[in-house]
Length: 324
Ligand SMILES: NC(=O)c1ccc[n+]([C@@H]2O[C@H](COP(=O)([O-])OP(=O)(O)OC[C@H]3O[C@@H](n4cnc5c(N)ncnc54)[C@H](O)[C@@H]3O)[C@@H](O)[C@H]2O)c1
Image 1: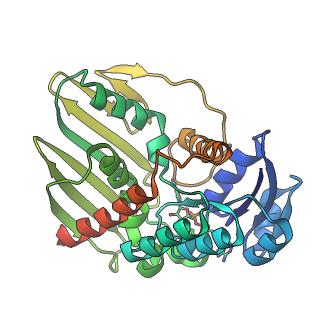
Image 2: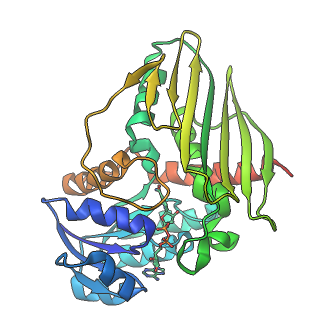
């Protein structure tokens, strides 16, 4: 299978390192408008490099394209690649708006190509473990789940696109979406949403505290970009059940009722240099999607409808929170 990568900035670098370590694919090409940066990043790894996606598609005719470009480009590039005949893995979020998701879903149907939004948290060991505890009922009823994902305000992106709400969707579509997506995939739609949202203003912090009310339990999600360059990236959760708890600490250690949970060592995707706490999900999501293509099966772990439902739930969240 011939694979080509588009956008090799922070997240594209992580995906690049997954592909370069895979032996059962042909990683043929990568493309980035910053060709000099790309050349430097790729070093002597034998791959063809382009500054333009169209040129790369024409020259390489890949079977699969992986989009790690800024959020506002995802839908247009995914449709273009599918119309060209490629399967598409796209970084999250699927789109900036539900209506754009619908345009994308129509194109997926029309072209018959495989597509997956890379909602990586669904593939991360700690979150898969928590899902298992919830679904098995081993500690009884869930009472509360508190999820948190915070980082310094991102000032490092290409063209500073993260700080432009129209291009990134700010913290809601960049950070909170991971936890909203996980929650939605495990519990479905909440009955009600309350909390506060602080839009990005002069001080360049942008955060939300949202409480999602379900029958008999609550999920509280904090997503934040804070104006503090020393703040370490943190992705944590605390799930409290009738008879136990499962906690992912700020040290990225998962504990089940205080007992550390260890996972098989995953292959490293190298130093990422970006805001992610662990790398286990990235190789997992990529390999899973490739397997779906090989088997000719639709992906059932992040269905297109489910990725769209997450965008709609983020929109509902923003409409429900009190602005502070
Ligand atoms: N899953 C995760 O944990 C995670 C983490 C970070 C970012 N992301 C997502 O990944 C995407 C990229 O984010 P990032 O942090 O890598 O941003 P970035 O700015 O670091 O990288 C984007 C790259 O795309 C390149 N680019 C811009 N326009 C292009 C074009 N037309 N064709 C080819 N390349 C182009 C830029 O030069 C840059 O290198 C975003 O959608 C973001 O939400 C996901």
